[in-house]
Image (spheres, rainbow, N blue to C red):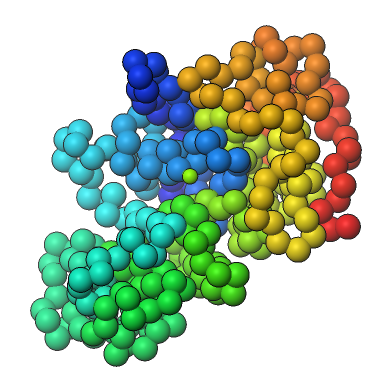
Amino acid sequence: MSLVTVEDAEVVYHRRGQAVRAVAGASLTVERGEVVGLVGESGCGKSTLAKAILGLVPLAAGSVHFEGEPVVPLGRGPRSRSLRGMQMVFQDPYSSLNPRRRVGDQIADGIELGTDDPPRAAERRTLVGELLERVGLPPEFARRYPHEFSGGQRQRIAIARALAARPRLIVADEAISALDVSAQASIANLLASLVADLDMGLLFISHDLGIVRQLSDRIAVMYLGEVVETGPAEDVWARSAHPYGRALIGAIPSVSNRGLPDDLPGDVPDPAAPPTGCRFHPRCPRAFEPCAGEVPALLEVVPGHRAACHLHTRGVPVTAAVASPDS
Ligand code: SF4
Ligand code: MG
């Protein structure tokens, strides 16, 4: 049983009387001990999919299961106990911590969230100290306030608070984007080592494909509300099976990447009026006859590596037109 199983999930929101399918039939799994990197341009529905997994937005169709239990969105009946098992680390460590409370108290909130039997004060202090050490900070920091820390330290505190609830899944949505470059690498490495040590799953959403590659066991590529490719990280890197995945990866300069494809024409279309057929077809350099009319299914191309592209069903190779990212 997978830790997280998302099947054909749809999330619809309403904008000026229009229904917008921000997530339009996305499927994904996360296993214990696994880092899944979720990539795609802004506006592709990555954050919305993450919120659906956490039960923060309702599904219009499809399903999300966590440890085999259906995720019940907030406000739709009693929150399932297992949902405590999921924690989120946000982009902005400056606004995710309360400036007026000591960080130790904020970490202690996480401890209470994760148990029906909250520890007494002395034990709680010990636990808070251990959590701070776990994220590389001295236990004495518990008495300080958020403004006394750098961005990287605050993100460590936010991670300690998330860990306090004893999650089995952490969702990190652009959790390193607001940090300086050296803090980015150390926070990414911290998350990866926690996942390995604590046998958690990590859904790591980032624009920085260089770090995603380093960190992830598997990569899922989203485009306009759909997961269009998923597979082992190195496999997706070396042999992306989707023209959009290839465009993303081909856009990476050799060192680290902050941006997204320059060579892709146009922007992500408005999800309120998505293109017919393959949603990528107006921008796809490989688009051919079936693409505007038929929706491609997400199919296994080689074991463990799936892609939604007509090139595969029509037996056309997704050729090595994109430069090797290693060159
Ligand atoms: Fe491009 Fe067609 Fe494949 Fe879509 S289905 S990615 S338009 S080749
Ligand atoms: Mg986002």
